[in-house]
Image (tube, rainbow, N blue to C red; front, side, top):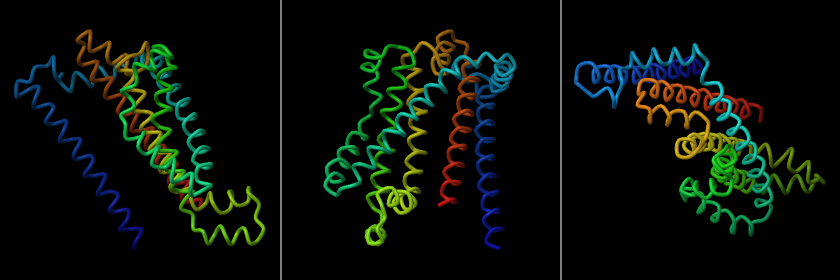
Length: 256
C-alpha cells in the first residue's frame, strides 16, 4: 500500500512538471504568434524546434560538447579528490573543525566566479581556466559536507570500535564512512551541479570553445532561433547529467 501511494505521488509530481512545461511552451508560442513579441528577442518555438533537430542531425555540437564535458569531468574529479581528502583530515579533530569549517563556509559564500578574470590571466582562455574555476567552486560544498558527515558521527560508535581494537582503516571503512556517506553524497551532488553551472557560465563570459562559447557566438550573429536551440540542448544535457548523479546518489544511499 505504501509503495502504491509512493508511486502515485511520483506520477503526480511528474504530471505537474510536464504540465508546467506545456504551459510555458504555450505562453511562448502565444507571445511570438499572437502578442507581437519581437522575434529577434524571442524566436518562435517551432523555429527553435526545427533548429534543434538540425543541430542534432548534423552533429555539429560534438566538438563543443566534448570540450565542456572534459572540463566538467576533470574539474569535478579534482574537487572530489581534494574536497574529500581535506574534509577527512579536518574532521579528525574538533579544533580543526572549529577553525576550518566556518572558514570554508565563509569563502563559499563569496561569488567566486567574480575572480574569473584572474583565472583567465593565470591559465588563459582555454579549458585550463574553466577547469580551475569549476574545481574551486565545487570544492567547497564537497569539503563542507565531508566535514559535516565525518565530524558528526556518533561518538559512541567510534568509542565502541576503538575499544574492540579497530585499526584506522577499519574505523574509516566500517564506522566513519557508512555513517557519513549520505551527507558526503549530497555534497558531491551539489558540487557536481555547481561545477557544471560555473563551467558553462565561464564559457559564456570568456572562452575559445565549449557550449557556452558557441551560444555567445550565435547571439553575436543574431541567429536567435539556433541560439535558443543550443540553450535548450544545454538544458537537456544538464538535466540528464543531474538526473544521473541523483540516481547514483540514491543507489549509494541504498547500499549503506
